[in-house]
Length: 355
Image 1 (tube, rainbow, N blue to C red):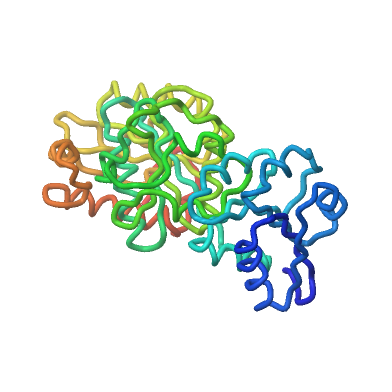
Image 2: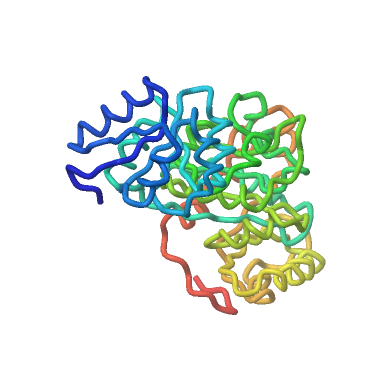
C-alpha cells in the first residue's frame, strides 16, 4: 500500500484534471508530480509509485512505447470514456472517468483494491434449455445479496439485455468496449443496468464478436469491483467464448432431462476438460430422467434444478425481467442457485450426486 510522502506521476496538460488528482492526493499526504513533455515522462516512468495519464495526452504516451509496468491509470472527465478505453490496451491501464470514478482514484492513490468477485459462466448443454434466461435470473437473484454483473459473450446472437429489460437504457455496450484491454477500473458505472445488475450486451447496430482481449478486460474489470460476474457463453464456438471459459472460476452447465439432452451435454463436456463444472437440470418434462441420474451420467455435481416455465418467453417479449409474475417459482430456484454461487462452499467435484 502507498504511504504518505510517496510520489505519483501525472501526465497531463489539463488544469482541471490536475487539480482533481492533486486534491485527492493531498488528502493522503501524497505528492503528485505533473509533467506534459514526452522526455519527462520517459525519465520518470519507472520510478513513480503510481502513474496517472490524462485523456488529453493518452495517445502521445501510448506512442512512446514505454516498458510495461503496474499501477498505470488513464483518467479523464466525462465524455472521454471511449478515448480512455481505446488507449487502455497499449498502456495496460485502468480507466477512471471523473468525477464518477473518484473512489477509484482514491483507491489507486492508496494502493487499496476491492475484493475480487467470482466469474461464473453459464452454458447450455443443448439448445433450448434456457441457459441465457438462467444466466439473467442468476445475476438478478445474486444482486439481492451482493453486486452482480451480466455479460453476453455471444454478441452476434445478442439479446441478453432484452431478457432483463435493459435494451433501451443508455451505457456502454460491446461496440464501445471492443478496443478495451488491460484493466478497466470504472467499468460498472458506465454500463446499462437492470434492477441493479450491470449489463454488457451487443448494441442493436453492431453485433460484431468482441476480441478476446476485450472479453478478458471486461470480465476482469467487473470482477475487480467485487461483483459476481455471470457470463452467458452462448452455443457458438468463438475466440471470445474460449476466452470467457478461461476466465471463469466455475462453469454452470444447463441441461434437460431427456436422453438427447444428456447426450448433447456429454459431448459439450469434452470441450470443457479441466474446468470446474456444476450441473443445473431444467425439470418438468414428461418421461424425464431424474436429476440425480442425469448428474451421475455426466459425472458432475448437481448444483440444483429450475422448473420449465414457458411463460418466461412471453415475459421477455414484453420486456419484463425474469422473476416477476409467472416466473416467481422459477426465480425462487434461481435464488437458491445464486446463493450457492455467490459465496457458499463448493461441493467437491465427484462422479456422483450427493446431498
